Image (cartoon, rainbow, N blue to C red; front, side, top):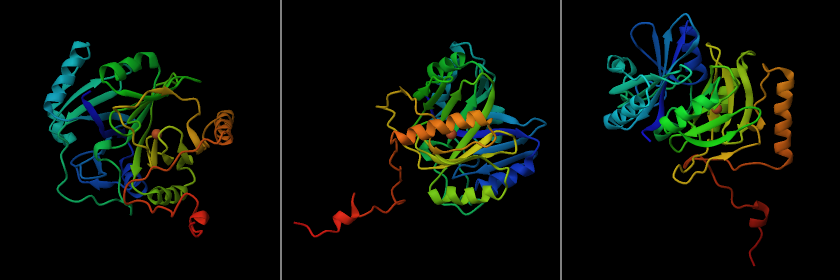
Length: 331
Ligand SMILES: [Fe+2]
């Protein structure tokens, strides 16, 4: 188990200026100056987390996964090599990626993966593009990424057995859907076996629920921007909404994701559907929207609800489980 976090996401796009506006004003990232046809964005103390490179296509460019050090990188490279995966050493790219070292390879469906160590720290404090309390990264990594995949039976052994991503949970109907963890974040990676290839979304998590709600207000100013309305996921408990990006895939902006203990976590099947409430997807065909709506109403009718997941310093505890009773004189 070498990979410990999602480190960065690289996008290829013809819409660099749109990305600049989107990433700063809506997501709250900080744009940093880089040479050439590249936009780079910070979320924390790292020199960059999101990179957008000029291209005629709108697509995911690459994902950067992090390992602890050069020894872990070499171990992983040797294992991939032994499995017949073509591993390229990306030393010429280390400066552009702002890392100490990296390798590059493709998954069975041709997605470009990079694994790096030694992410460069910025020498100035993070200054968000809109007023937010900050992004939850650190040992949890940048967030999570989700692919649509053509053949999940081919992709599953690659990520689970070769990269050692651990299954958090999975659904089998109407098609395979697998969530994987590589640290305490419930999932850093997921695959939807929809039968078609494509990048579905990346998720970034904010410290404060109000950061998400205030971003939602900004997104609603543009009637075409929101792709999933505000809602809460059944498996990672994230309260979030999704936006259309300039490149067609989505970005999920969330708060309150659960942390798991990878040492004791047991993978299990889920049947409750994606959301406890919300996450209406207005762009979907009406019958699919309807089927998701029925799942949510069923989840609600069965009384399935989850405690909010809060970080120290981000909550005030009420006086008791039943405030009016607590207020009664004792004895
Ligand atoms: Fe997500």
